[in-house]
Length: 371
Image (cartoon, rainbow, N blue to C red; front, side, top):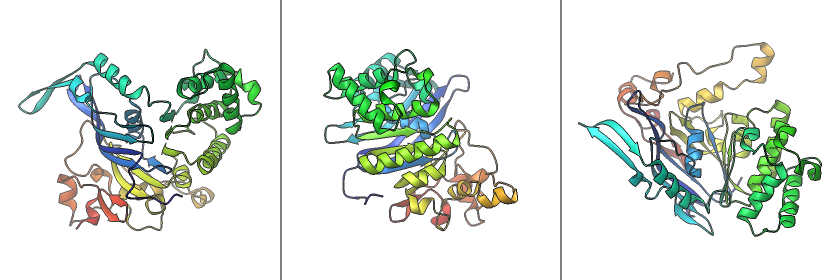
């Protein structure tokens, strides 16, 4: 784990990020990401965890500039500061969206999708791939089925690094295929994605992402769809690469054990926003007392050896995942929370708590800690 420098400028700083999609049928916004604040220091790994629909992947896609569906709205700041680049990725995007209101009610949203995409590409073209690389959930569908794995890695190397010669790019590709421990790199270079297993495709995706030596790596569910043995090997590989390269990483996963092992800090998301945020040892430690009720419920739902041995019941989080169209005025977790007291019930139901610090660099969005 790295020593976090609180005075240093973060490599990535997300402020008040809102990524909304407008539902014409319901004439309402789907608030997929709503007022998210995060930052990642150079060299650290930030784990992002939460149930499906909590906004993890949309946050990552917003950072990558891959949100283009219209009509939709994205606002806030995504500030990236490396040795080569200093940019706010969302600067001036608001001019491409018009919202029509009647008596404070949103009646329609129109978006210049072409203008939006062209502006986003101008901002992101020199960043995506070179400064920020991403490993997607499904490696086989993310790779081009009509190109060999090696040629795809070589193409990325030629596009984003100083290795422009075909032979140089091939040698670098083989180096990275070997680095991610793909057996027989010379043979696998000429294989197409359909001829490789899911685990091999994921290793190839990792090689492609790291081959351009990005400042930030975003890994979105890197073990999803793989069997348990391959998942373990991929996690071992990521741990080894983290130790050797020290690449700054945003790691998104449902698997809390992976987040616990690889992350320096953790953001727990629910209903499109961050509910708890802090050092991994504090947020995901069952011995730590000041945990958000949602984080505690997530940890309690993890199968244990005792449960399996005794064939006991697994603890589930009661209720349904929040509908991000109809977000309540109070705490988003109120309807599912089992720790509401009489003293805070009215606040929980009618006032949404802010994300506040309860210990050094440890923040929680919960009224339990602010009475």
